[in-house]
Image 1: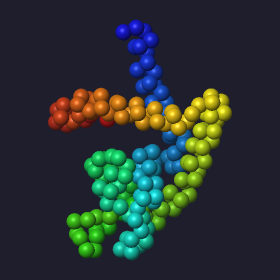
Image 2 (image 1 turned 45 degrees about the vertical axis):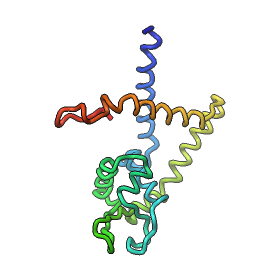
Image 3 (image 1 turned 180 degrees about the vertical axis):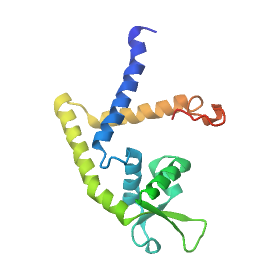
Image 4 (image 1 turned 30 degrees about the horizontal axis):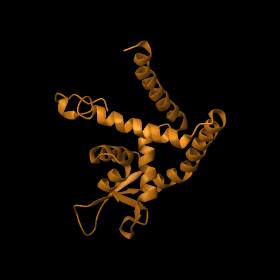
Length: 174
């Protein structure tokens, strides 16, 4: 492996870390990470407005996880944290007690309404600057990032990220 090949993985890790730090500057609230914000936005956009949930958007954990392409336990833990902050609440289904709806609260709905356009506008400014300064195809860049993430998941699914390879109490890297 030559010197250039050895530095590419490190540069990729640095870029990913830099992107994570940059998100914190974009975040609409200091105590709201991108995953939590994405969860609230997903609930608002794809949630069903049901009479039994007071007309605010609601989804089950399974529906939310499927829509976000994440696991049920991951989404469930995030929902618990959002519930503690007062942004969502769990409501049992009136007809089927096995079903629990995750619903935006007034506070959560207002947060998404007030901040989603702010985040969208900030991101659009970044995209516009990228296209002007580097003549970059942002759509192609986004596709490449998704492709890279898929490859990373495949590459590490049976190793570092696979929980079956960890001792009890040890957590995977991702």
